[in-house]
Image (tube, rainbow, N blue to C red):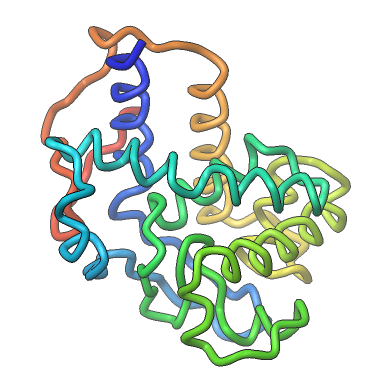
Length: 210
């Protein structure tokens, strides 16, 4: 079972790592995001690190899953959707910063967080609970505006609440979310997972497995 969990985590890491999406969630210009940031907390917490990158991913997910599920429940977002969005946005890394200013686990912009009621500084969004609280609130609103439909929800989370027409970037994002959710609903044999070129650092390019 442990190997299955690690294998599934590797699969999701490949989906999430190195992903560059276009985002205009606050109504501003669309820009590409760069998720290849350095996470200082990972170098500081060497004692807590697992032996392999795959196990490190499992630990990161376990560290934040409770908060993700808590706020997903509070804002009536399906837990599987919430988990999938965090995996794809940040690979469960709380200090990732996008090139367009997106911050943290849910890659929320400071301007977007303020629209959701956040009154603190941009740096406060690196706090995992703060980031999840306002990111989940934004995702919940996107889901309401999207009539609960998965791809419409993702469109409005990725391209902004006012977005009406699906674009290729948001469609690709939705496809990844569907793949992540499907992986949560089944146990994938270790033999079925391709580990080719998997190296979980943000300075590499990762092939998608679908």
